[in-house]
Length: 270
Image 1 (cartoon, one colour):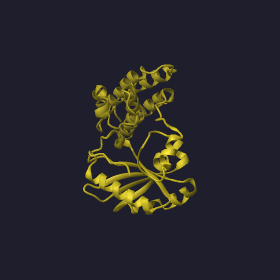
Image 2: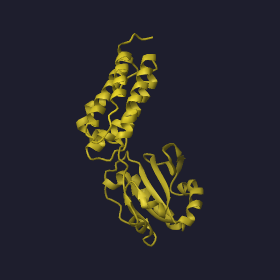
Image 3: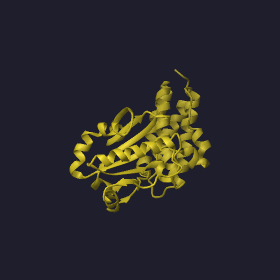
Image 4: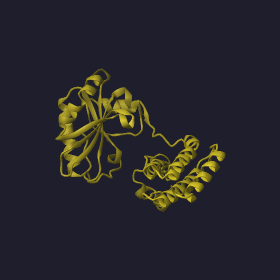
């Protein structure tokens, strides 16, 4: 077992220590590692734990079948569900009883799968160096925003939101605004600052230079506020888009969408 950082909150420390004890007794598990904010030594009482649980390929099917029971052996499990909604069925998202309750993401992987990963996790415990060896077989690469993919879609999303604004479907507009921050503006802003482009995570701390512009993309359930927020999304996207090179700008779509939004903002409300 590798030493845990002194700055680790006590509820997280106790959970990790109990987890290592449990995995030592389960011979199918060959390693435990931590990712996320654990890697930057920035965990606080509000942090969740992102844990990677490794097994040999031959045992992976059994481990996946038993993952809820495995999770239950780590602490007082209140609730859990698998991560298909984020495209990761190997993920088990858990809530444990504690003071405060603790959110833990458990990702169950076979050793060969570790050759392709988005970050280099911190190995907390392993059998015979198996987890370290598997990590050495590949390199971490976090996916960066595909600027052309975004440009090809952004103006269609703007037009869709403008149509809903014109119809008065403001809850739908609010959903689109959130989607644009999470899918486009947050990742591009983070990437422009050299940070990991993880949606809207820690935007307040990592991209303070864009904070006021991002705040302007937040609206209330009001047509004027929604229209202004959509226009703020466009302004910030244009600013962040200028950081990229080699992008084919969809100028005709941009003009059509922005003109349509302007008409939706000024049109009489139904």
